[in-house]
Image (tube, rainbow, N blue to C red):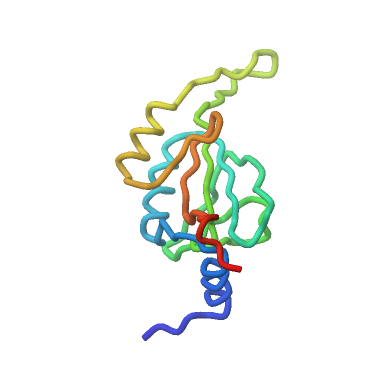
Length: 143
């Protein structure tokens, strides 16, 4: 039997206290992130234990065989179980030079096809695609 770490215990206690539903496991996150790497898009992440949302990044960093994600500026690897959601900007920006504006390519159709084929829960939040790792069920929140 595997022993959970104190960090795991804190994450699972937070999930239970907030009345969240866990929607992704490590395997599903790893498959999703691997599939999204083919798109040169901007991403940002919201972690469970933070009110802050990461800045938009062009890369999700290396994904290891262990369930961690390297986020630039995060101070180190982030465990996938701590990801509340990952958001994708479907507009690819191709650099065309210093004097010319970036070329914008809408990848909406490709992103939707990819997310549907992965069978992950996603929503459209304004112009962005949000993949849910944990969903805050406000109606079930415990005091």
